[in-house]
Length: 572
Image: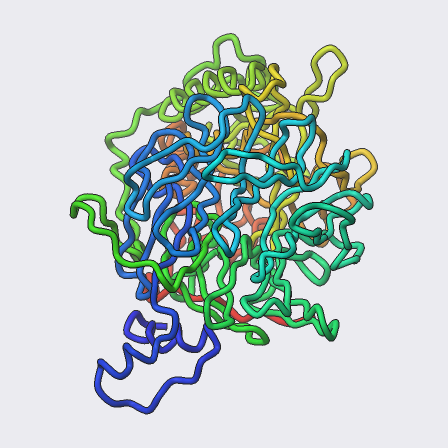
């Protein structure tokens, strides 16, 4: 899938046949809709989410907000001259509006409770949004001129993720009101809500098609994070895009195609932690990226009326920012040895590699500031002895390199549950996102949850708890500490064995191979004596992983250059 093929793939993705080859002008005019794509991404200098827009070729994107506070959920006005979005400026989540070039910023709401997920009505007169201003998450509308706010739903369960019908008569949203995550719709002025999906699996993140006939949404009903399309007239259901890659935040193109946030692979190697905005066509498994990079993405939307903003050159970035070759790490510049954890209580060896201890300390401070709790003041485990071995953990664990820690499995303060975990499917693997209930529950800390949480004791999904929470997983990632997937081995599977859940494990690799990291904290002769081929095989390490561990006697296969790839997967 080369960059040169992108115009063709965009046409396929939006469901329009390509005209016969002729002049380049003819081919450009054949691209329906034109306009620009809007999205939120963590591509800013400080890693915070900003609002960006991109042309359809995806060659360059422009940062419209460039603010150290998180900006999310952008939505075009119908004439594409303004953008509404949510931001945590002034230490509180509120709605803001700006011109399409990022100028003329104006605050629309000023309420201590959470206001977020804004979306503009088709006639431009109202903005639907989610708010906790009356005690729990419900759907509201705002008149951007008068400031008048009207409550549309009123239910003790979580209502969130609003989207307008193209005629502006109804609002679809995600709700837990029947004890399960479903897509509902309600009249734009309020009234009885109608369940549109009615399925035992979680359904969420709806988007109304331009013709008003269909609803696109994300569901786990036949895998993890798949894009479904439900025909509201016939009841027919289609799929779009690849299977089980954890697609998120679907939106429609003007021509009846779809886009969503997806993970990407490079060549034949699949580094699914990278994300981007991809285009899909109903009924087809393939897709192509408009923008992609090693960052987080959210909430894309396409306006056919948007034009390229006139902004300084320094605000532009490459749309597809990736490389098939990772620059080598300057190992010699990294500190060697281990550093004690000080007042942190920890199982195993209470120390981390000297190279990563400062980032752990910074993360601990940020968690205290964001949540009010010293969650990392006690760890289940920090480092391990170099020759440690048991039946459930990897013999080549990053704990041995001092670059991994395990949080507490359960965290309660004065009997109140503080730690919650939520499942998240990525590339067919189950990951977990950790949330901490904040000390202050007035809206000045954290934000409400809309995702289901997992009851570990009873192994079932529960509706999101009411209150305000901090995303610990996001804070950890900002400091270079990343989660791992739950275990799904034949003899060690998260579905039956609690230790295989692995939601507590975080590690920081910094581009090092495992053996490079080990050499920074252990003697070479000892490593050579312990980590032989025979002992690794006896410990259950699979031979195909040997080269990727960086072992001196195992050679890494040559790098495979290539374009961004969305594998088709398999329909179930």
